[in-house]
Length: 166
Length: 275
Image (cartoon, rainbow over all chains, first blue to last red):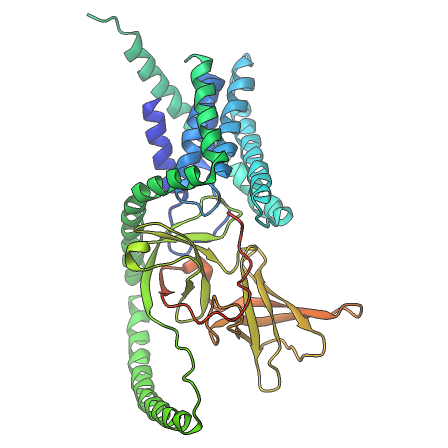
């Protein structure tokens, strides 16, 4: 799991990366959401929630929002992904795409509710249509890629832990 | 992994969230660790982008260079005239016994190193913080106009809420020959601004320039906020409102200036998110 947490730190940095000309561009893939969903599916709700909390703190480091908002949204996404999806008979590309899309929208809804609870004004109607939906599609595509990568990491880490001690 | 470990982690996170001071301290430590990485990444990307731009626009840059040389000559002549007028103004003020108008204060040059990962929040991180004298609520500008204000300060970095965010509010005035209409400019969340609470009887036209009024004390008077692009009036309402195009292109923020000495307080401060 340490490797995944390091990966999440890199993903959070990439999300907050201020490329000239793209500083306030709002449509973007949420790499942290994609990784948290992927790990939740692979390892269950416990590790899904833990990596969600870690990802939330990394996101909070670069954000002007209250610390709790990104932590709660990513922990809930990891928890839900770990609770529901491992029970499916087969994790197909379609399932991953839908999981990424829905996970991104759940993350948006929790952000809106969290910010409103913290006293912020949020114009969510326009954001939902023009930012959250296109971002969810990009996140769903990112989930497909991240899941394959996370499978390799999981195989490597499982093989290491299953090696008999001399 | 046993379930109780996950529950323990979730409870710890909940405690950090529930106690705002603990949450802010945890985030401050993380921000300190992240800031150098963000700075390195942004400098590397900026360097690559600038190199690409230079190669692509070499011919255009040469033409621009000539134009800029001519502009410098013209501005130097104007600067000499302005200096003369400034001296004359100071003399006349002394004669009239008026207090000198508050100046902008020291301008600290800062670079944008990160943007807010939460897409519904329009904020950026800059590479200077408390160690350089940056304070919360300090105005942030470019030579074109107002960018936003500092909402969070860490030792070596700060977070700036842009005027285009819906949680920003700037007290503004119209700069026109026949109008000094005042109102409040707020972000709309889609990269534009809206000027509200302008009395119906005050003249307000498309193309008018909106500048800071200085009311509220956060922003000094006379900074450009944007240009009116649409005026909305309803028969039944006491106030009219205007859609304002920001003077600063928020997508291309790179080098900004933090005004280190805030102007003298003179009223209520702009709305701030209760974070």
